Image (cartoon, rainbow, N blue to C red; front, side, top):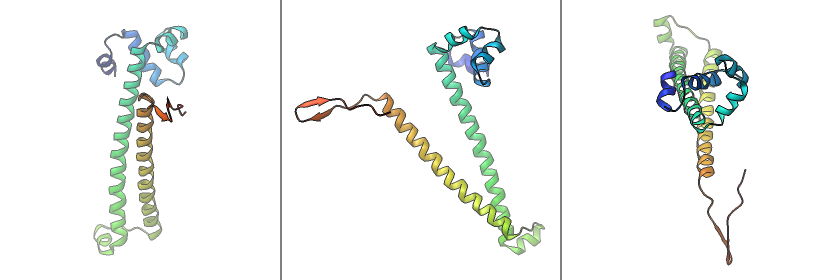
Amino acid sequence: MTETVRSLSTSLTPKQEAFVIAYLDEDFIWQAAQEIGISERTARRWLASPSIQATIAQLRQERREMRENRLAVCMDRAIDIVADTLLYASDSSEAERTGHYIDRDTAFKYVSLMFKYGHDQKEIDALKLRVAQLEAQAVAPPEPVVDGTITRLPARQA
């Protein structure tokens, strides 16, 4: 992980790099500061640094992507297991051939889980899109509104 920190920001000292990792791993600033042997005041001062903020943001994004990838692999495997199980439930000759029998209630639960996963994934995709829109809106300058002969900037929405 330290190599990742070094590749993101060459302006960080080894102690700052250690703090960034500890900060992401601990629940509180004082815990991260204590872990690497600095004062909480120094930790807060470092957190105000743009290079440390950028490094933290990048590492958070990398960790988020790694978790999403692991989750996707697990979900793909789970879907394969569910599909195989449903095959055994629907095809008695296949169940007989493999010796894998499943009752209808369990099959129904698996189908329900697949539908729930599909629904949850749609919600997650919609949320990602909305977050991207809001982030783009936050960095874009507001467009002026022409009201009669007066040009005014719209009020920012929270």
